Amino acid sequence: MIAAEGLRFAYDRRPVLDGVSFEAREGRVLGLLGPNGSGKTTALRTLYGSLRPQQGRVTLGGRPISTLGPRAISQRLAVVVQESDAESMLTVREMVTLGRLPRLSTFQRTGTEDHAAVEVALERVGAQHLARRRYAELSGGERQRVLVARALAQEADFLLLDEPTNHLDIRYQHEVLGLVREVATSAVVVLHDLNLAARYCDDLVLLESGRVAATGSPDEVLDPALLERVYGIGVTRTDVGSHPQLLFHPLDRLERLSR
Image (cartoon, rainbow, N blue to C red; front, side, top):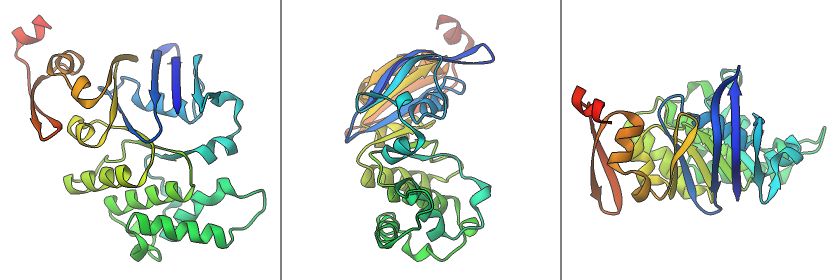
């Protein structure tokens, strides 16, 4: 389990996280939601140690992450952030092989076990046919598949993703999140699209101005009255099967004033 406990963080004295606490449980997909500037990405970065909170702590399996070195963290947490141009000249297989680095000692070369893990990861995301292609040549959806494969090759306990559906069309948004839900035993995902969160997440944390506005299941958190207050937009909810689905519309001036 990953637990955030009373996190406070500020950029140049501007508070971004203000007493944020939540838990990401094993075997579940947790979605971090909230308007722009609510602290979603900052919260995610504290989970894998890229940022150290000024107050509070993050624990991994009950142990403060601040007591773990980068190597130990990367063996437990695999991170998928926005794609990097610096890696674009690599082939797909080379990109996925980078996921094995946390498992290697200094100056150790990849071996049979590492190559096998890479092939398994490529197969799990359906990207074996892309293995020889340059990463830069791939579509957005294909690139996201490769980044997920790299994380899987890392064989970590948790998969952490920052807006993995960004710049993808509708088909690839569902494809990538369906893939995450299928192949990752545990995941934390930063999302903007509330309907995608409703369909693919087990638990949600809704942030508002650096504070937790709500936590719980999609059914509990995706409450129209709550969302209208946090996002400042009209919300109508209908349920499709077991999944909440939301429709949005601008609020008129009187509605805004009443909120």
